[in-house]
Image (cartoon, rainbow, N blue to C red; front, side, top):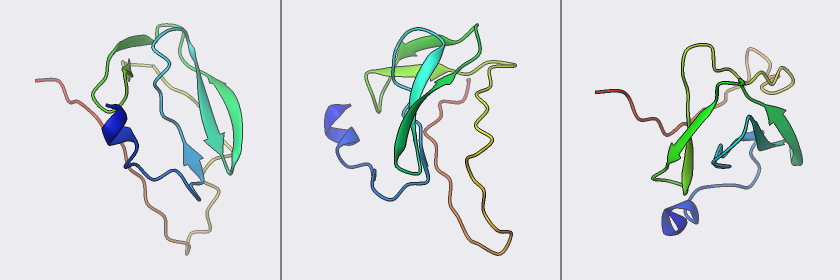
Length: 88
């Protein structure tokens, strides 16, 4: 995981949420260059990860709201990426 993580872009990102803490219902994010904590759902679960040491398990109703992220003009292009493991 550490070797792979060094290849991921981290500069000039509007939102970066690694979701790698491994325990608890809070995570650290970077929003427009400022670091802050975000509450996750109380039922948040974690498991060993592949990109990082830990990975969050997202279930029904497990949402983190970050309303100030992604304030783009409708004419402004953007991209979004996520590493997911779909259930079999």
